[in-house]
Length: 235
Image (cartoon, rainbow, N blue to C red; front, side):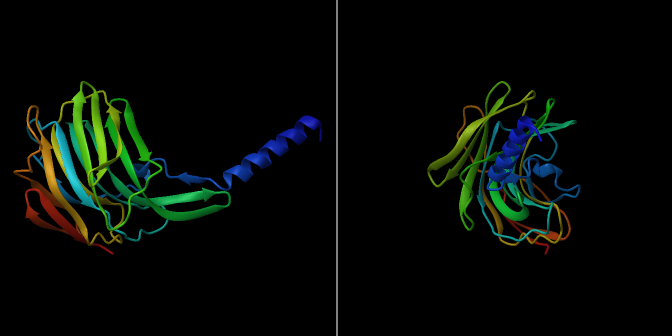
């Protein structure tokens, strides 16, 4: 083995040693499974031009997920086109990740932001701060300029995360707030969304004054009001 080859081996071993203490998360939560099950609210339900902002207080619940490519997410979103389907989304998910050397899977929880537009799919973990279980967080999305939405995550009055999601299409068509799973073995009991709010230009953040529910078997939805619901079932 020549000197150059020896150096290459040393660099490879050094890389693997460093990688051994790093975590590799699933890059795209939407690619985890082809199955989707939902429980939650639309604002309009596929019609009209929606308000330009959405806000929800969502309880972070601790639940188990089957190995190794399943997840549960809870989020609010602004649909910016229904055909093709484009959106911006903000929430948290419990998902699988791996220590890459050695390969060890583990379940973890993270905030995230997401979009889908004419340029394709974009998904980003919000790190390093993670949600705490049994806590409420407020998730807010707002159209703040042509081709951009601002996002905010709050714990109480404290802003944890904020930033911009750039898109190619920006006409709001609907608002949504949902629990989403990839496996009916995931129990969503204890899921709670409240103070669902919308925003229109020149207005404050009034509570939702209407909703269109949807729920997939085996889940159930408790429609407390237009702006509050809980969900259960599965497992």
